[in-house]
Length: 151
Image (cartoon, rainbow, N blue to C red):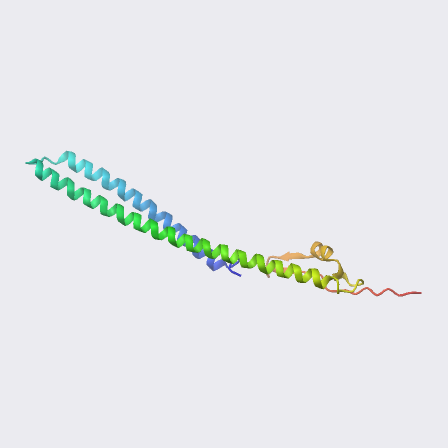
């Protein structure tokens, strides 16, 4: 059910797009701050070495804080996507198990269907079935029992 849920797919796409945009913004901000701080360091004339050390230490602290914030956000996004991946894998496993159950049931029931019914041959039914895009389901042939009349 979740694999064909369009809302869930759209939500996942929006989250991924937001994460990519946010990552690009963080990278641009870090590059910009690096350029700004290096330009300021070149333009500033300091009265003493201690004043220069203090100014550069402040810039370093700001950059480190931005880096920590970016790393934290990256970890949160990785955790979120990891949880979504686990959810998709779990859903996929449940769907595979359901499919196997249905296949085993069909194999068991097929021997009980009368031979003169068109449902006695599953491969023929699969071949004649058509996927309907509008309704989102399979259109299978109607059951038909072909009675043979002896002369």
